[in-house]
Image (cartoon, rainbow, N blue to C red; front, side):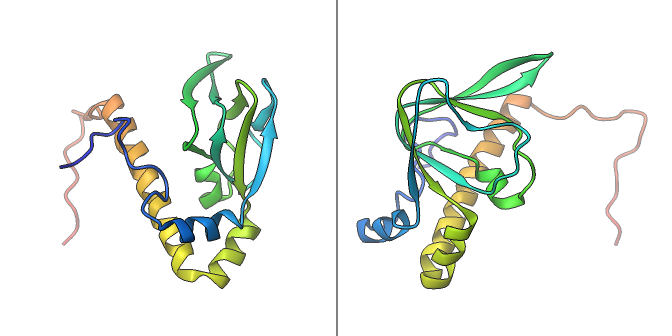
Length: 160
C-alpha cells in the first residue's frame, strides 16, 4: 500500500536506518538552539547546511506581493535547507523559529567527512533525501494542477 503525499503517516527522514546507523549520522551534526522569532535560514544567503528539526516548530516564509507569507509549518522530524544542500544556490525562503526550538545541522563539510568515512550511510542519506524531495515535488505538482497547454503551438515531437 502506498502512503498518500501529505499524509502524516509518511515515513520520516532516515527512519529506515538502524538505530546504530542513525547514531553514526547524528555524530556528524551539530545541535543549534533557536529562540522564538530567531531566523535559522535567511532568504538570499548562501549556505549548504541541511537541518533536521529535533524540538519545537518553525515557519517557512516567502515573499508574496511585497509581504512575507507563511507557506509551511515545520515540526520535529521535518527538514529544511535540503535544496541548498544540493545546489549551493542562495536560499529561497526564510525559516523562523516559532518557539524555543532545536535543529540538528549537517554542514557540507561534515557530510563530506561522513561520505569518506561511511560511504554506505552517506549514500542512504542522499537517497532518502531524494525521496523526501520527490514527495515534496509531487505534492507541489498536485497542488498546481496540470500546466496549461499552449494551443497556438503544436505538441513537441521528440527527435528520432
